[in-house]
Image 1 (spheres, rainbow, N blue to C red):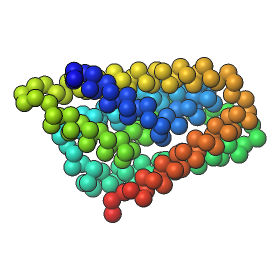
Image 2: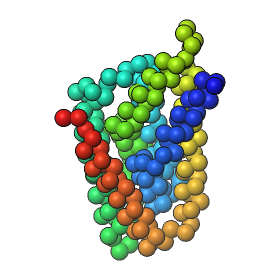
Image 3: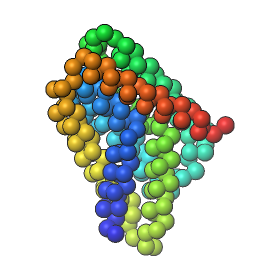
Amino acid sequence: MNLVVTGWVLGLAFCAAPGAVTAEAVRRGAARGWTAALALGVGSLLGDALWAAAGLAGAATLTRTALGRTLGAAGVVLLLWLAWRALRDARSPTPRPSRVRPGADFAAGAALSLTNPLAMGFWLTAGAAVAAQAPAGSPVFAPVFAGVMAAAIAWCAVLAAAVGWARRWMTGPALRVLSAVCGLLLLGAGVRLALGLPG
């Protein structure tokens, strides 16, 4: 299989799976519009790029280092904080007005992906597996990385457009239900990651 296509499939499989970034992008986009969802998704590309590059470079032992454990713990804290905010918004009688400064959605996406132990583990193991199966002497990093990032960028755009389109039906009660669902997803992800962190 063409290495760019391999990267595309890997990138799409990772990005399209329901997770913390998707839940938070949907929640923010429903409340403030497609640009918030897009900014969060683009910010998450930083973590995707870092972990995909590390995996393709063969740094599969990083998840078991002190740095990996520290990033994992920071990711748990971030997920639980975002879950608390989402559940707090779900209890509000009216949707909270945006108090987010420009760039905060981007920063939140970057923080979610950079501290996500699942992203770290996925990219480090999948990247190493792809690199190991490539023919000897063939360039692996550039084509696979290009495919991964192309898929991730496309997913960010599609998700933001879908959220922007669906936002027209998001009334106060619907926003509260969406915030509750996203909050529970984020809480579940945080608890799951906390239980899976190495001691």
